[in-house]
Length: 437
Ligand SMILES: [Zn+2]
Image (cartoon, rainbow, N blue to C red; front, side, top):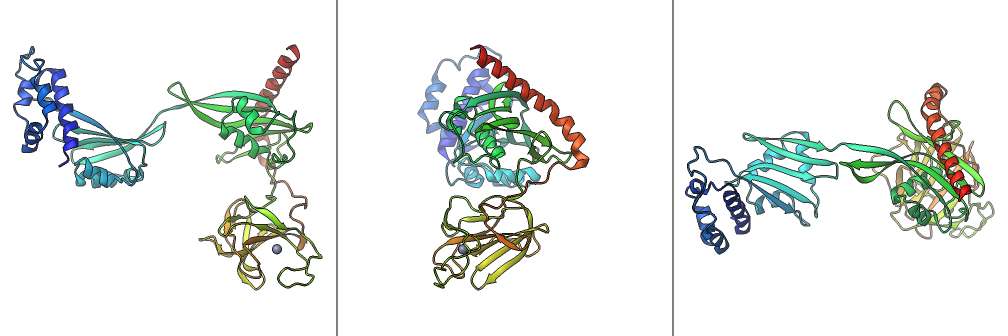
């Protein structure tokens, strides 16, 4: 038995007793030897108990049935602790632990509690667990309530209210700093950059005087702001060229950003299949091969990166080759419709769970950087073909992703026209405010 826990329990009971002034019947009958043993060992309890507050009771001491006392306790989860070790520490029944985990589908979520967070425990005065709860997020609480010898586990969600707000900024130093100054969260700044990433190179082509207007959601729980939601619409003016994007959600809940005319903001292909890498060899049809030491066209781009760096497919498609080829080592080829294909070579390993015929989505990991095949060091060799002909992946004109389907165009206009009108109104108001300053 854990003494510290008992201290908490007994203190809890005593305070409860003092508060209700019904102690004579309760204190005389504490059951179980452990209670008495612990109580004797605790001078603090005796000190409280000897205070005149308890005696004499002002309320008739006879209570027909002693009210069950409820004891609540907060346990801060430390690193390495599991629900099982916490149950042991708090001297809770293993049978209850099992009953909670296996109560229903949600029960298992108690197994993924995280260090640093709190577990709230409610027991009766004999230490029998009545309720266990864990705040998963600001909105969701996982809670187990005793029902006789079983537990019912559910998630209680607070309702989120959404407010539509807007922000404008002119770039003076960087998207991040000026975005922050305009009151945007890191998340919203990232979302904004992602929406326009296909048209604007935020690392190289952003200029002083560029500006943006963004309409987005702010989320509230019980009147308290707790985060930002999605961007509804935005305009970004880069080097005097204005790009406008609006959010559209189809019937299946798929969300994407389009131009007001219904063109996708995305391109069908990412320019590069890898993050955090530098180009170590360009597309060059007259290159001297570093290993073979003779002229051999380099029909792709090499990216030097650490072994194990994830490689992503640059477009939606189907894996048509996945295996070893002499020079390429471990190589994956993805076919994108009839016209385009991409190739990724020298991998250290493939992504598990994929095979020839697997469908992959743009940005999905397909393998990891390595130096298999003919390679001097760890790098990715990337090729892009149009109608079977090698093209320079860095300069080839990339097609837009699919526009809004014709059948959805009416729904798209209906949903997005008011949003564009709202964006225009905010821009006009902002312009007016600037001119009258
Ligand atoms: Zn290469």
